[in-house]
Amino acid sequence: QVQLVESGGGAVQAGGSLRLSCAASGRTFSSYAMGWVRQAPGKDRECLATINWINDNTYYAASVKGRFTISRDDAKNTAYLQIYSLKPEDTAVYYCAAALRGPWPSTRANEYDYWGQGTQVTVSS
Image (cartoon, rainbow, N blue to C red; front, side, top):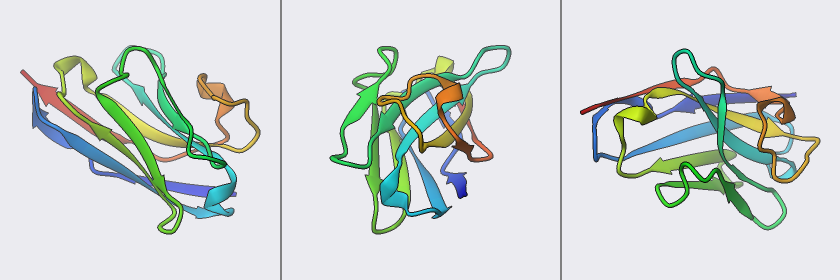
């Protein structure tokens, strides 16, 4: 079992930055991949980025590459998503998720085994 709790969301103006955090507990944090997924109103979940547990390799969706940075601190059992140059279209609920089974990279929502409750990000123009 893995429990995930996100934090760091909020309301920001376009062009600003945010760092989302995901605190994990339960199974050894350094044994699974972590990912960030968002869901905007009326849209499907979109997998944004993932980082593996072996060598911290990362993968980004083309839509966010260059603006989003995923990282993890195994000593703190925490994953992060740094978002730069926020746009109104980034408005969504952001979820962190854990992928215990693979594949690598996990680019579909159904490839993740555990989810946090989500944190709202709202970007105004």
